[in-house]
Image 1: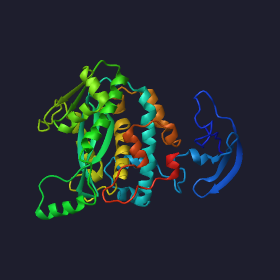
Image 2: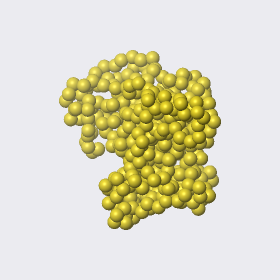
Image 3: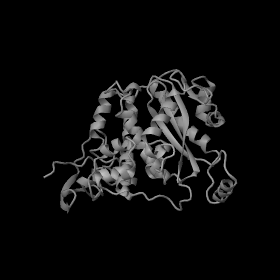
Image 4: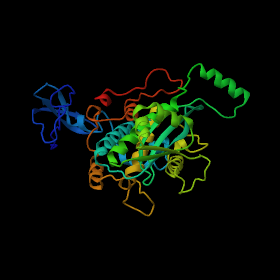
Length: 376
């Protein structure tokens, strides 16, 4: 028999769904078992306050799964430039199954980041820039803005926006782009809006560090300055000298002494580690939301499991960014043991869009499917 006690009631409207940490949940009774091929006999429970029934599996990251796969192994393979097909062959699973597990793992890591946000004490400046790739076809490029610690190379936030294809094109390509513009036209201010959301995360870093001021380095893209000026809290802190926005040419030598080295470094790492972003690859993203789920899982691996330097085994980017090492280690041991709940997780706007798959994929009709349990 499984020795398990539910930590809270699974019904969001129940008084026992949100509990204070010192208050144990005891208002339930055993409610039999049910049998599964994947997990054997699964105990069930019933809440005495609201009558909701739930099981051990309700609180598992494998909820509703028909096969148990190792999430951390999938994350490691994804961060080692394996495609979905390659991961599927290695684990004897379909690419749909692997995509499903990556979606689940991405939600787990978003909740992980949210929990650890209260135990970070950053002591560094920041750099931000857009990583350009594409989804569905090269007629639909995108800009993934990333906010990186200048010293730690820890990725504090990422945000996505679709772009209109630019650059040199043949007459036929221009004609095809004009046709596609009638079907899907990206937000012309997408980069500015995306950077505004990233800028708000920079303010959280400033408040966590308890520093009098913070420097934010970017290249000379005009949308970045407009984003800071059009966001009231960013503009106010810039006006009183607590947020210093510095720019440098993107054509400057990409050495370690360049203030944009952190984002240049991340550009290189993403290009070589995520197969869909390798240049001239036959493997590319078909769905924006799934692409961001893969990036979310990869950035979690980069931040918490990858050594800050090859010869610094055991020292992660998170440790260099001022995250409490003991708390981080404890959370890493528990990340795959219990299911992440949206109702119990505080998310930024960008994290919310990733969790709920709110981003639009070019030419795709209707919203992406999201399981009901992912909204709980």
